[in-house]
Image (tube, rainbow over all chains, first blue to last red; front, side, top):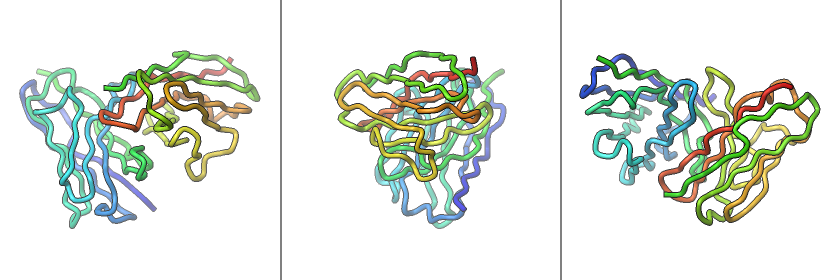
Length: 118
Length: 107
């Protein structure tokens, strides 16, 4: 069974950093592009970033470019999102999702909550 | 960036009704559009990709149509589990923007 489990969320101060992890099981991470998507509670979805199979192609939404870094460790079957220079408007639930080869999120984790507040 | 606009933002319907949700892209995206369903407190679930291809396991009462800039999601006969929020997403070019969502409520 395909499973994605995010972790690493929590409370961070404005200007601070957090590192999210997304541990995959039931499939080989190395065979798939992966996405990060976030959602402010009660609001809509925002695509954050994606990364290709070997990490050589990465794209970001303008709102996080230069502050967030996506990476992956295929040997550990884990995806990461390093978040720095955090702002209040980064407060959201962060989901990782496995791509379906057509740029859509086929399988999703349950999400991890990030709160940026002093 | 390609913007995506959904309508309506909310919709009330009854069990067994046929409903249609619309999505418009700010430029031609051919058929690069996906639809998701999300229940409160849960992650989104992929329903349809490439405009009309049903994800494995999704009931056939869901269908998608369109091309270019105008797209629709139709649910032919509403079931209790269908009352949720629906999102479209353009998948042609990054950023893969989502629509604002359509909340489908029981009348």
